[in-house]
Length: 201
Image (cartoon, rainbow, N blue to C red; front, top):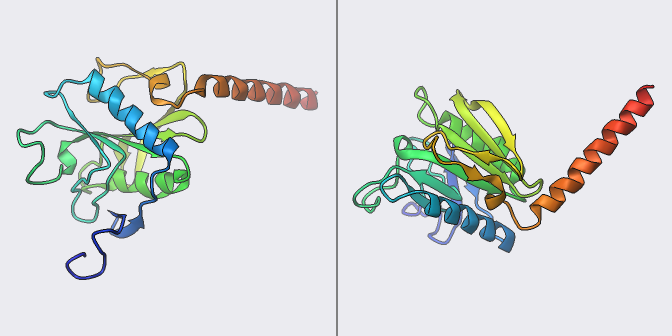
């Protein structure tokens, strides 16, 4: 597209489902979250287990060339110097979502699930939801959706499908202060339930 003059080298875009999607500039909270996720994986995994890449292209032919915030890919001797990782090389993708939350849910997740149809899509996608301090994990792609989704909060731990022996503390992925904010939300949910129960009586 650059060669055809449709885009310039300075344009920040991704190709998802055959559509050109603008990539918003990374603000400080987003950039810090990406660095935090990358650091957690780099500390937990050896180079012969996976390579952790941040905001670098994946070659998910024929209609997708996303640049996820963090991707764990299978190791390769040349570290993908001659070609971007293809779908079969991708183990886990993590998208950091703040102002992009709706786009990540409505556009990116379906695109990741549908990669390489009729073969299976990307096996595991984590959406690090900075608005609500939680990790939303999607697994078992079925068509253009994921069959299993689960929410993980501050005190919980998660093991990626590709590395069941590795347990990652969700707290290590979330921004500072997440525990306090989650306690406040839990208190609000408890009050709402009590009030709803009182109205039912």
